[in-house]
Length: 327
Image 1 (cartoon, rainbow, N blue to C red):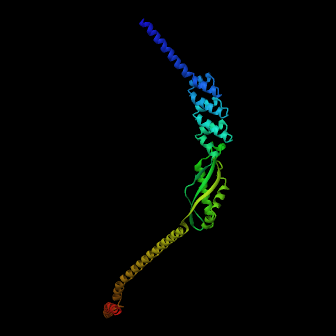
Image 2 (image 1 turned 180 degrees about the vertical axis):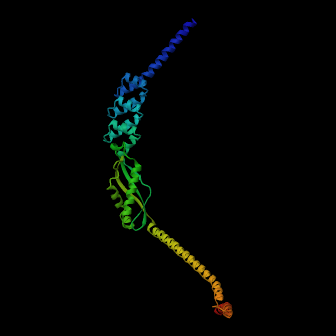
């Protein structure tokens, strides 16, 4: 009796496990929902999704949304996009948004945009509602040397045809900044830019800066223009300081050369003075100079030295007296 009860329990357990496996492999509620929504998906397809490790709920719900929006999207395309690592629901929502906005967006292009790492739904929204990009503060110098600091607001719209492989917002900002610097730098005076700031935007738009990017530039507006430093005057001051240092270096070089020449001349004088005793000795030996002549010369030297000392003493006494008189 106990064995019969165990057998019945085992059979019930096997039936329950089998029923769970069948319900897992065959998602009947999804099949009913797809059939009731007019986006029929066969039971075999749903079972195949389980074996291919594709969540049937993601694919079926996305197909139901597409069919209800009037789009014919096959489950095979949705499965392929999921297996490639894409976002199925985001792509389908982007297709629905593009269709409502009368924007041509095939499934393959939307899938390619999504697989490229871009938000395809955000791109469609940007095609409908353009985005405003504000550049950082761009500094440029006019020809008169005055620095101007400008900020621009760029209104762009996503270009779905060039979204794959096209440059992003950073390229737009860099190109607009380059155009602002070039336009301000070519102006003869900073006053011209302040009087007509729209000249900057017109010049930038004429260059076609959106070429090769994922956006289409609709307008460029100069939000603010501030006057900065006088760069020309600073450069002239720096140049004058550099010229001054060069002149000082050359003057120091000439002074050093003069000092060296003076020392050389003094050396020659000392050398000449050293020859005097030898010449006198030679004169004594040859008889051209007598002892009385020598004594007269020594007396003359002593008298000259005394006169110099007296003159120096008198001048030192006279200077304080002159200073007191002036006071």
